[in-house]
Length: 220
Image (cartoon, helix red, strand yellow):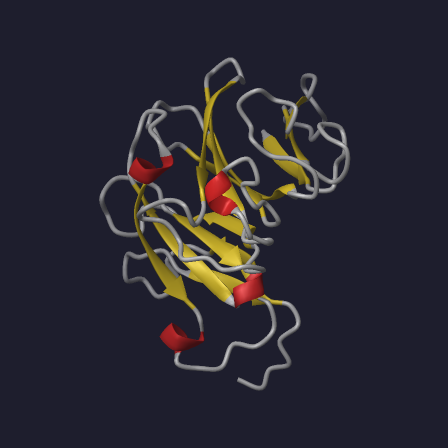
């Protein structure tokens, strides 16, 4: 099956809050059943106008129950309902949607600059512009995530913990940043605009990444 983001969808709010659509597929490429839509009108999903919920999406079974959960990027989310986020502007959020086998969202946790083990974010970073399931990068039995923050020319590697609807502080073990500093070359032009796992390209038993930098002029 497929999950598709529609980040300027207005159905769940006044303007551009976003949505994701789950498409249940048949073997001939057609839809086998009716689709499901999740947006900011859902009681457990905290987002609102201009957040861009659904800008990116990736499956991840974080609680190891055999049902795919979802990591959903909202690159313009400022967690405006939290007074601790006063003054935030387009920092971005990843929503972890825990799913059950009946296609219901059972709980949601947000990963952003408020998380104790989470990413270090500033205004206009747009964390969540891209997201990818990168497999179990550190070999601890838990799937990890790569999240692009294209406003900061950074990709954040989120080492995740297995958790059953745990809070966001417990979901993230640690974060490593990939950017100009770590690469040793100049990154200039929305590095992190897209990100994908490409398997073990160099046969060292570690998943490798490809990262898009859409407006890079190639000067690095």
